[in-house]
Amino acid sequence: MRKLFVILAVIFAVLGIIFAILPLGTIAFLPIGIAIISSILAIQNSKLNHKTLPKIILFISAITLLVVIGKVIFVKDVVVPDKQFEQKKVESKKEDIKDLEGL
Amino acid sequence: MKKISLIICFVFTVGFGFSQIKSNERLIYAASYNMSGLMTQLAQVTMTTETIKTSKKAFLHLNWEASTFSKWDSFFKIRDVYETYVDPQTLKPSLYKRNIYEGGYSKTEKYIFNANGKSITSSTQKRNRPETRKTFAIGSSTRDIISTIYKLRTINFAQFKPGQTLSFRIVFDEKEYPVYVKYMGVENVSAGNLGRKQCFKISITAKTDKLRGRDKNLIWITADAAKVPALIRFSIPVGTGQLTLASASGI
Image (cartoon, rainbow over all chains, first blue to last red; front, side, top):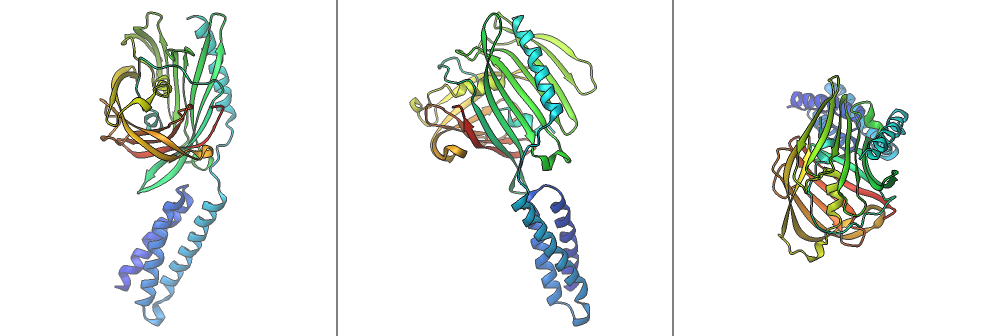
C-alpha cells in the first residue's frame, strides 16, 4: 500500500509542478491536492526509517501549492499592448476605408 | 486550434428591428475555456463600435478583438480581429473582415457585399498559401457573424414567448448557414460593472458542426434599452467555454 501511495504522490506532484508552471490557474490545485493526500497516506503507511521520500514529496507539493496560490493572488489577467498587432490594425483600417470609398 | 473563431461563431440574421447600436460603445469580456471541469480564463474579447465616414456615406464599424492574456502568450498566442462595416440604421454589412492568429495558425478573410445584395466577392489567405478570390451568391438577408450578433440586439425579446424561435442566415468560411434563435425566458445574470441585470436568455442552434448540443449555445442579453450581451456560453467540438462581461461603456 505504501508503494502505491508513493507512486501516486510522485505522479501527481510532477503533474502539479507542470500545472503550476503552465498558466492553468486553479486547475493545479487538483493534482497538488492528490499529491499531498497521497504523500500523507504514504507517510502513515511507512516504517520509521522509510518516511523520507514521502516527506520530500509532501514538502515539494506544499511549496508548489504556495506557488500556485501566489500566482492566483498576484498574477493578474492582463493583455499586454502588442505594437505589431496595433500597427496591423491601423494599416487594415486605412485599407478598409479605401475599399469603402469604392463601394 | 480555431476555438476563438468558434467562440465568435454565434450567428443569426434578422430582417426586422431598428438600430439602437451606438457609436463608441466598448464592451470588454473575459473569455474562459473549460479545462478538466474548471473554467480557466484565457483571453480578453473587446467589442467596439465606431462611426467611419467616407466621401459618400457613413458606416458603423463593428469590431471584435480577441487577445490572450499575457500569461498565455508564450504558450498559445491569440490575436483575432473580426470586423464589419455596416449601415448605421439597418446594420446591413458592406465589408466584413476576419484576421486571425491562433497559436501560429493564421487566416485572413475579406468579404465585400456587392451592391445587388445577392453576392459576395471574397478574398481569403491562409498561412503560407496564396490568396484565393471568388464571388459567390448569398440570400438577400444573409449577413456576416458580427453584424448578425449586433442585429440580434435590436430585437425586442420582451414581446416574445418562451420557446418562440426565429430563423436566420449567416455567411462564414464562404458558406451560408441557417441559424435558429430561441427565446428561453428571463434570468438574472452578473453583467460586470453594470451589476446584476435581468437578461433575455437566448439559445442558438446552427445546421453546422461548429456548434454542438441543443440549448448549449446561449446568450444572455440585458433586458434594458442597451441590450448588452452579458454572458455567452458556447459548446463547440473541442469543448465548452464562456464570455463574461467585465465592463461596458458608451452604451
